[in-house]
Image 1 (tube, one colour):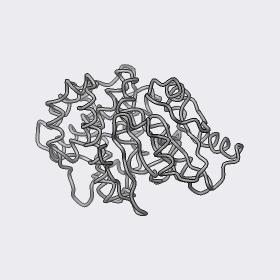
Image 2 (image 1 turned 90 degrees about the vertical axis):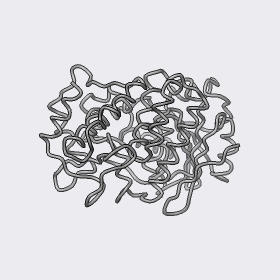
Image 3 (image 1 turned 180 degrees about the vertical axis):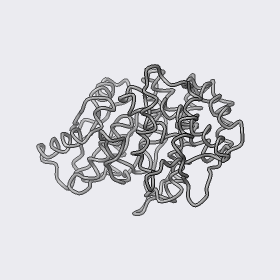
Length: 362
């Protein structure tokens, strides 16, 4: 059995189990990491149906469950209130524990419930999408969206453990699966040139969902994220590099009314932000082209979807959490595996330069 990746945080550590078949051990891991607690599983209705049918693998959890409607539009304060009300109506107390089973929306939403219910209860993250395995389930960020932007209300609340079973990815539609690969490309871009090159070589195996290749990809991405967040849990410094591609991505999602999947938005955001880095002299010419080429090999889009309001994108970026003193800030790459750093890990970029970079996706 492979050793878990260990993530450090201010109050200790937690393990990330990356194992084919790990879901079959869920009951055992609940007992280990949420001992003597009354535990509820939170999942969206679609994932819970897959889990109970056995399509995600063994389904050993027979405890209480609470569901919500699937999709990014459910990641709201209203959904948070509905889930916390359901826990209170069922009499869950301070000895509660939660399991977040599903994709990034579930992890963020259920994690925020865990962070705030009874002033905080422990939880397990059990991601079932590639995007959530590589990113949302690790690092302790939880939260909900608001009409003003993504993840503007939330809390840092590390899980007790993360349980990643790559076999669950067999249930994902191709579009959803490939969207998750954008986060792996981001990890290579911001922190590990050799990992980026490995993905270039192994792109066909990744697209075909080779289990061994996929397990290696997940583990390396988790290791990269663990190393970054272990040194900067609250995003006061280097953790900002994990936002590469996301300033543009969050704006794309919001302007598309969340019709554009997060991973596809990240792919487009990485291309725009690499173009910005080249325009500003932060990166040498060729970075955008190489990143775009790998994203294309992995089946990710290179153009903006038709009908998207281009003029609204820059205005939407004005609400991004990284912004300072009214200026839009970006975390930009210098080269593969290395991020630009001056006074900090992000730099302000004028609106005119952003608009010019967006035209590369036309």
